[in-house]
Image 1: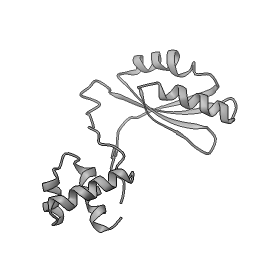
Image 2: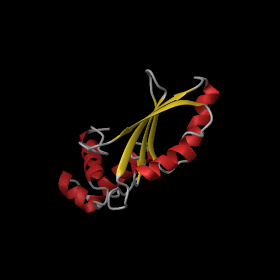
Image 3: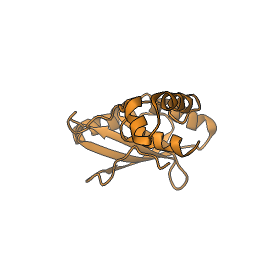
Image 4: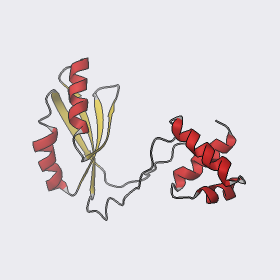
Length: 150
């Protein structure tokens, strides 16, 4: 990956709807080499996918929650079972296995406290293998970015 590839990736991260021509104009390259570079970056996995980022609040999701989840056993099977179960929950935006005093950090979105409480009781806490869940409610979003430093 060279400087031009990095420029293309930076532009696409900011606005994936840029046309090949618009990207070429910004980096002083014609359409064909820009197109070929983007296709190569896709093939090589540098570009994972293209998405549309929605406004959570306009959609009525006003509550963001982070949960620390501790499992009752730290075995391969317990981790695999939890991973499979958590992937089935659309309210879960992110889930990461972490080191430290708990096993997972889970980012959840909900309409309000009542909706979260229902989700917590009926869908999250009933996942087999969970020993403990601590919930933290976001009071203010300071930074929310999808841009990866290149």
